[in-house]
Length: 227
Image (cartoon, rainbow, N blue to C red):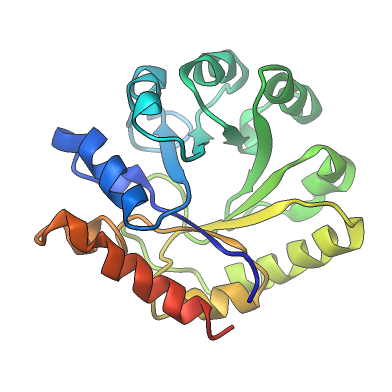
């Protein structure tokens, strides 16, 4: 079986006990902490910043995957790097100079990712794929959790998977939005290897013992084992 990574988005976690939520979900078998940053400018919502990342960093050794939905993006990159981010991804529409932003992320000591909204063309990869560590395909329009998966994302995943395979480089292909146990296998077949799951993990555990996150993550992995 291919190596798959599950990255629960803390956007769907209980913010009143966020540290506990992160510890529990990693203990239950998640691989990555997905950290959604929204600015009420690039996207119509406002979430969390570097101080929250800094507070969570000592609680886990798992990679913190910061998805910046902010514009402009360059100003905030060093702050998240200093706060303990391992991966920083941004949207091409949010940068005046995409290559420069990728360089800034790398110079700050983090891995770099580029994010594509449902309506964003893939041509931005033409000249920077060799500098990326991650490509993130949004299967919903960014700004809110709990949305339904947009099926066209499967075609985009297939196209990016081909680009990555042709490059011969070790680049993660991440998908974010509406990923659940009933579609994660299909998404994996389209080429994704890293799965952001917010409401599917944290939402499903809100009214249960938090230690039951292991059964939720186990169900996702069981579906992936069928690929």
